[in-house]
Image 1 (cartoon, rainbow, N blue to C red):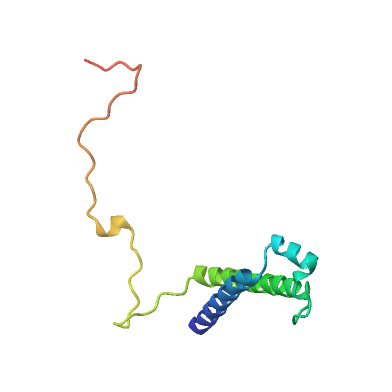
Image 2 (image 1 turned 90 degrees about the vertical axis):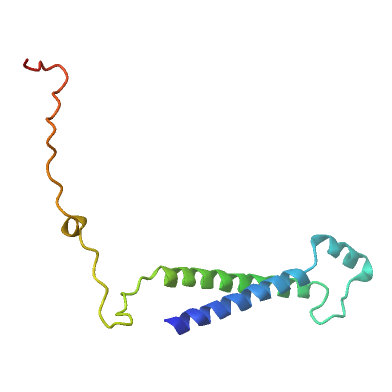
Length: 122
C-alpha cells in the first residue's frame, strides 16, 4: 500500500509541474492578434494554431491526471488499517468503559427537591 501511495504522489507531482509549465508556455488570447497580421510563426513545428491546440489538450490531460491522483490519494488516506501489534508484540488494550476503571460513585445523600406546584409537608 505504501508503494502504491508513493507512486501516486510521484505521478501527481509530475502532472502538477507539467500543468504549471504548459500554462506558462501558452499564449494569451491577445497574442493571436499579431498572428492575424502576418507576424505569426506559421513555419513552426505545429503551425500557426496547431501549438495552441496541442498545448491546451496536453494541459487538459495532465489536469485530469492530477485530479484523478488527488482523488486516489484521498481514498487511500481515508482507509483505516488495523492497529499493528507494536514493539512489544501485544495489541494495545481496547478502550474500556469508564465505569469499569473508575470507582463507583455513591448515591447522593441530599433529598430530591419537590416538583413545582406540590406542597411540602411541614
